[in-house]
Image (cartoon, helix red, strand yellow):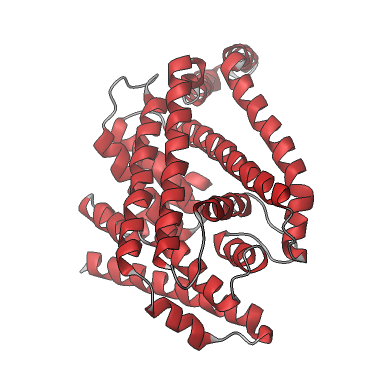
Length: 349
């Protein structure tokens, strides 16, 4: 009965999320004579074979993330269980979809529990993963920015801000990310020793606990000191974005005859969406849905109704599609709705 209630509330939340997204589009764009009938017809005309095919690469990204996390775990555990990492990854991303940012901490918590390693080390690994994700997002956006600027395409005022400041943001953030990776690689151990020496100024009863915490924290980023590990992490990060772009391409093919996008157009769209997931665009906010609509309408001349349908489908594929599987995995392991929410809140605090 408890599992049924969990599944019911999860379905209600997902449906409510889709409804809120549609309401947002309607509220923000109703003054532009949004044709809801055209949007509905475009959804009906989709080639569902390509839609189903687009699910495969996006599910592949979760497997790739599990492989990448296994590299982060190597300094602590030579042979981590890929099954445990994959189930924690699927459950973790389900929690992110259902609960927002607090759900981010479900995955490191589950991995720490399953693999019997300190939670602080896995929070460090999570931060390291975010750094590599940011680096890849910046690289993909830099490619999109370069292609658009070289083409001389005229864009509307909303995207003009992105073109004006995008290059600067990519440069500054890219340098910052590289400096962080460089410092983790070459200065992590000296920093750890300095912190441990400073800890001895604390009362003796707190020193041992603080030392364990600091050691576990730095163990989470120990993999950055290995050339082979760094290469594998970078390789998995590239593969992840290849799969994401493949998902975008399959979705674009499902819209053939409705929204016509070339492979280069899809790559540009993916680049701008990666930028939108990192920053908030003044006046329009952030997120994949808003950026997708802006790029499709102002850069590729797609009608607003069709662009909105595309954006909703993209959001469902990249965020919502994993939820049913994640709930099944969580319920199989004895986790329910309240457990996932509690884990996210407690670790976040």
